[in-house]
Amino acid sequence: MPGRVVALCSGSGAEFIGRAAALGADAYVTGDVRYHDAQHAAELGLHVIDAGHFGTEFPVVASLRQRLADALAERKRTVEVIADTQSEDFFHVI
Image 1 (spheres, rainbow, N blue to C red):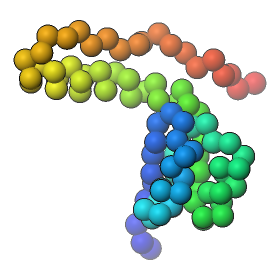
Image 2 (image 1 turned 180 degrees about the horizontal axis):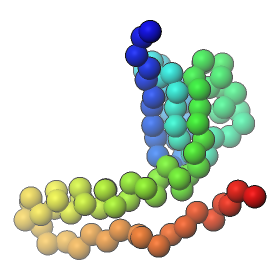
Image 3 (image 1 turned 45 degrees about the vertical axis):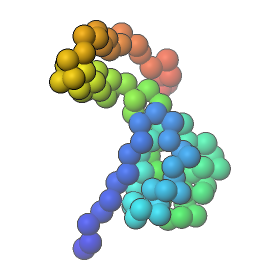
Image 4 (image 1 turned 90 degrees about the horizontal axis):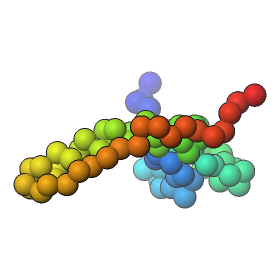
C-alpha cells in the first residue's frame, strides 16, 4: 500500500484545495470549507476535514509565539511577543 499524504492549512484554507490535490494529498485538513469548495475537493478525489477555523488555528498560537520570540532573540532584538491564551471558539456543537 503506498504512503498516504495529508495536507494541512490552519484557519481558513479552502482556497488551497486545488493545490493540495495537485501536490498529491489524499486528505486535507483545514477550516471554513464552503459547500462548493467541498464539492470541488470531491471532484478532485481529495478528502476534506473541516475542523473549523478556531480548531485549526488556535492550537498553534503558543508554538508560533515561541518561534518568533526565539528568532528575534537570535537577532538580538528586544521585543515582547505575547500569545492569546484566553480566546474560545464561539461555535458550540449541540
